Length: 487
Image 1 (cartoon, helix red, strand yellow):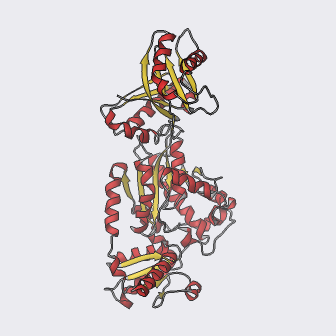
Image 2 (spheres, rainbow, N blue to C red):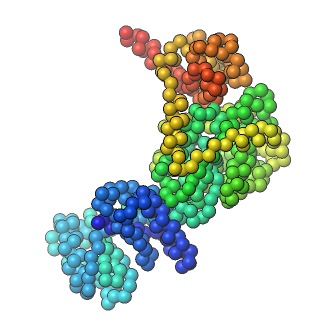
Image 3 (tube, one colour):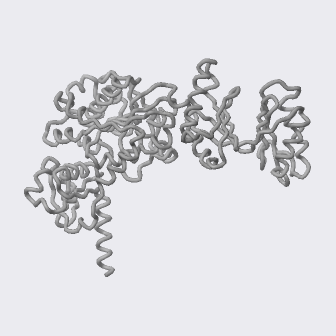
């Protein structure tokens, strides 16, 4: 059966008691990552964790170990026993000789236990034994590296080192609440705190249920299926559409872009208190959007009096995008962030006392809190599939649809499709009575979130709707014209 040697870094800096606790948690998470296979044997020994697995799951181990937080690196190895240094050199030469033939090589050895030789002795003697047939030793840029991890009278032989996720084992640093949208930044922030060992309960405020909920679920799916091994992560989904309804009718925030964010903090704070969490995690980066100026972030932190963790605070957008692609959370589609609705007249420099004007009415807050849906990790896949099925629509129904423009009047006058109408968001629900309940309505806006909200409102009334954004609609119209011309 294949054997893997697993290495960690920061765990080794802890005292004996804490290190032992973290090692046990890491072993638990590794076992969970491998689907709790009964045929796995896992043990720890002097700063290393060893894993023996059946051949049938060997291919899966490489991917699984790479997504377990706390692992610095790992290698598949061959275990040999020896009595003397001569025995070890002979066995290692037989194992590595075919790999060093006609190649430049190096030998690297580590040693734990009591021996009458040093690691350098083994490196030198094995190098001499492998020299015939090779192209010589190259310690800087070898074609092949023979590696040995010597432990008492056993040696683990390997040549490749695979990088792990690093950090601390998930579950060793308590629990927090991550505010996550369907965008790029917040899932990355949640991942970074998971890397530091903190289990994340994820809070999402849906503005256009179930449309934006589907995009949100897709964005966090990698966090759940790939990165949360060994944790009981829970998702909390709130229906925030009543907030949009209130703002559409003039009952909004004084400082819309920051006031809404304060509301989100308070919503996450309710969950944080309930679960006994240590604070809220956000995807904010200084200066990235109007609500994230240093002044606004300072005012928000002081206004809510809840510990706020911002792991992306010094990242630029390209760095965040690169990391989101690497960990698998980069969204293939996006309706945009909430700021596309709440940034008509953004505030960029406010004081904590300014936010005192932006209090959500108690009855509205109660309504939103009561709308909470909790999704356990074990139920995530089924819940996502149910949402997906609810959004399936017949593309042919778009023919003859009434196109509704939700952008500003200025943008509507600048460009709009022939036959489209311009309607303020507050008047969306009156459309069926005015234009008919048996037709399809195609909503579009600049980014997509506002049109998704409008579509969700009419769908809840039993009306057939389609939604898109300005760019996609222009492309759709151009393709239709090309198709007609080619006929």
